[in-house]
Length: 420
Image (cartoon, rainbow, N blue to C red; front, side):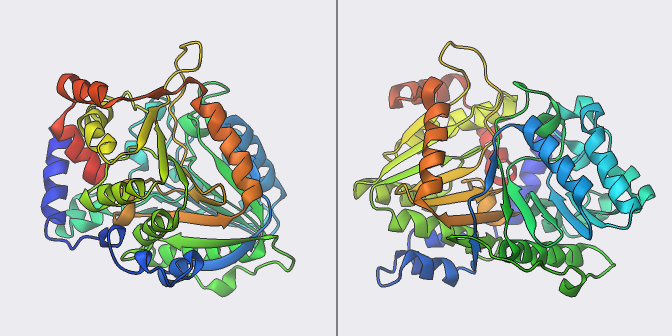
C-alpha cells in the first residue's frame, strides 16, 4: 500500500512536468557539425584531466582502502552517499572518520534522506549515522522524509544519488558503492558487485568539491565556500575527462550524445534500465545504423524490481539491442546483485559514476557521471565486462514475452519508472 501511494503521488507530480529526455531524439546531441567533446561541454560538462585510476570492484577491498585514506587525511574530507549506515563490519571506517575529526580534519558528510529507509538487506545490519554529529562531524541529510515535505511534494521525489569522496583537494573517488553493509561490509562474495574509481587529480577534486559545496548550500543553513577547501598543486594525468551533474538535460544530453556519436559499439551495465519512449527511440536509431548495443543487467530479486523489469523487457528487446542478465556464474551459482554503472563506447569512451541508464537518473536524481577518453582504460574495463558476461544469460524475445506474461507487474514497473 505504501509503495502504491508513493507511485501515485510521484506520477501526479511528474505528469505535468516537461520531458527531460527530448535530447535522446533531437537537438544538439545529433548535430553532426559538433564533436562529442563539444556536445558534452554544451550540456554542462566540466573538462578535467585525470590519470589512470585505482579501480575497486570488491567492496571489502574498497572499505580497506578508503579507511586508510581517511586515516591519512590532513585537512578535509568531503563525503556524499545515497545510502549511509554503520554496522559491525563498517565500524573501523566510521571510527577513522571520528578520529580524523578529533585531530582537526574538517569532515563534511551528506547522506540522502532515504538512508534510514534502506530497502536492501542492510536494514538487518544498520545503525543510523546521526551519532557522527556527536564527534564533530558535519552531517546533513539531503531532503529528509517528513510530513512537512508534503507541502512541496517534488522535494520527496528528487534524491541525491551521488557517491563521492574528496580528500585534501587531491584524492577523489566516484562510483556506485554506497556506504552501507551490502555495498562494503557484507564480506567477500556477499557484497554487491559494484565499482569505485580513485583518482589523484586536483582538477577532478576541485570539480567534485564544488559539486559538494553547491548541494550542501542548497540543503544546510550553514553555508560553505569553495575557498574553505583548498586544492592541491600537481599534475592531473594523461586523459581528457568530462564531469556532468544533474541539470535540465545534462545527464540525458550526455547519454544521447554518446549514442548519437557511437560508430560501432556500446556496452552498458545499467541498474533497473526502465526507459521512456525517447530513450527507447534513441536505442532503436543507433541499432538501425549498425551500432552493436549490449546491455548487461541484474535481475533484482526484490519482488517489485523483478516484476517491473520483466514487464518492460520486451520493449527493451524491441529496440534491436542485445540484453543479458547476470545473476549466476558459469557453474550456475547465484551471484551477488550487479549494482555497477558502466558504459563503454567504441572501445574508447568510458562513463563511470552514480548515474544509471534509466528514466529516473535523467532528471529525478542528483547524479555524477564522468566521461573519460582513454582506450587504455576501455581495454581493461572491456576485459572486466567479458568476465562478468561469462555466466550471463541472453534473453530472446520469445522468452521476454513469456516472462512478462508470467511474472511482469505493471505497478512495479510504474514504481521503478519514477522511483526505482
